[in-house]
Image (cartoon, rainbow, N blue to C red; front, side):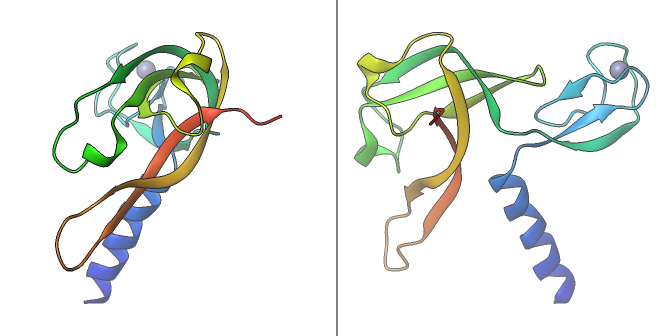
Length: 134
Ligand SMILES: [Zn+2]
C-alpha cells in the first residue's frame, strides 16, 4: 500500500517537472529519459531535471481535437528547444495564436491538461509552456 502511494507520487513528480536523464559517458541530456544514448550509445544514465526554460522552435495550431480536448479547440502545440538542448513537445498556454513567434523565450508552467468526463470530474494536470514573463 505504502509502495503504491510512493510510486503514484513519483509519477506525479515526473508530470510536473521536466525530468530527463544525462548520459554518464558523454554528458548528453535527454528528454524524455532514454535507455540508450543517441550520441554515444551509452547505457548508463543519471536523472536530470531541466529548468523548464527554452525557446519556441516550431508550433502548430489544432482546430479539431482528440477526445477529452474538445473544450480547448483551437489550441497550439509547440516544440520547445530547452536551454539544455533537447526538444520537448507541449501544449502552449497563456498566449494568442497570432502572438506566437519562432524564437520566443518560453517557460514551463503547470496547468490543467484536460478534464475527464463523468461523475468524478477528474482533473488532469501536467506541464505546458507559455511565453516567458519577464
Ligand atoms: Zn552518451
